[in-house]
Length: 71
Image 1 (cartoon, helix red, strand yellow):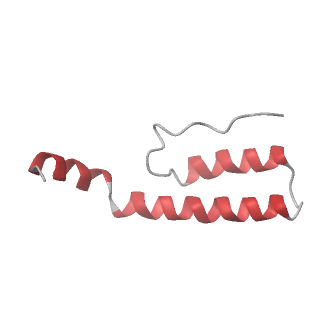
Image 2: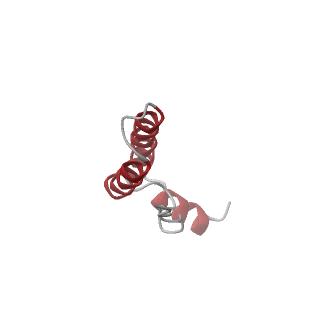
């Protein structure tokens, strides 16, 4: 692998970013479980998803689509 590409990847995949990705998925799983258990509605799920995305920015957040508001 080219040193320039390797340096770019190493600067993108930091421990902080990887940890944030994991926390995002854990928070989303909790929100999804709450939705499936009917503790929250679809609208609250979307709100929680937006909060999770802001609090724990997942990898590639700059190219990920925002939550689609269908309500």
